[in-house]
Length: 282
Ligand SMILES: Nc1nc2c(ncn2[C@@H]2O[C@H](COP(=O)(O)OP(=O)(O)OP(=O)(O)O)[C@@H](O)[C@H]2O)c(=O)[nH]1
Ligand SMILES: [Mg+2]
Image (cartoon, rainbow, N blue to C red; front, side, top):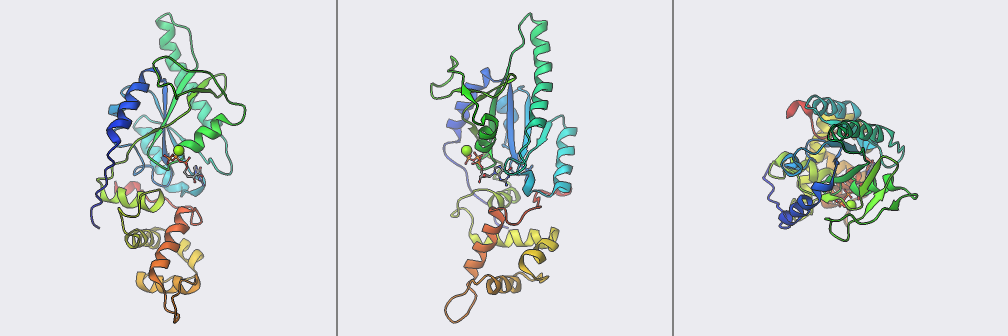
């Protein structure tokens, strides 16, 4: 695999913004994709957020391979993380997240009490790399009944607090940060499952990576979706091209179209029950 060189220029600016906001925040919801709970993590969130309590929110539960993702949940919990796995699309149940917030706030308010301060609502900032579901989470939390509770001094004017319930206020815009793209495996996982611009990685290589992962870890999914147990990538592409009608004039298979079919099957969640970060490999 070739190394992916991709580093967005505006990272420093985003970081400055987060640093400005952080002082008024009680809890950070760090959002990751449950299919890549390692690759989709923010590169150095702990330095940025210092000692702020965090809840690691794994989204896209409905798309992940639960048994593999659970290994990661265990891994992070053993490191002291608060972890919540959520489906924000179909069976939305935010109760486990509310429960975690209560637990974290109980500790925080205990400390406040010791200092003679009143208990208060949790002020939450959602953070994560692009495409992990930050906006979806904010929308799910806010729902229709959400009302903005006004500006808080010290924050940029455009940022508002949204009242979620009696326990939680949420900053209405998320902090978008970057993953450890320097790690080539991470780059491929991100290119396969989230949004990375095409000019950074050729479609062929993303498609090859997806197919290699599926053949290695999920041969049954390949068989179910593409009706073959072929494991040779070239032959597999030809087969998929034929059954999916990726043909050019004369009936030849258009391999580029096949790459697109495979990538969009994964990115659109048609291929699900997959987790590409493998705990045993890290
Ligand atoms: N199936 C499924 N899709 C989800 C879930 N959460 C988010 N998505 C989808 O993931 C995509 C990205 O979600 P967004 O909420 O826009 O992600 P974001 O983190 O705000 O992305 P940026 O604003 O680009 O940083 C959308 O197509 C969502 O519908 C989930 O739990 N399950
Ligand atoms: Mg968003």
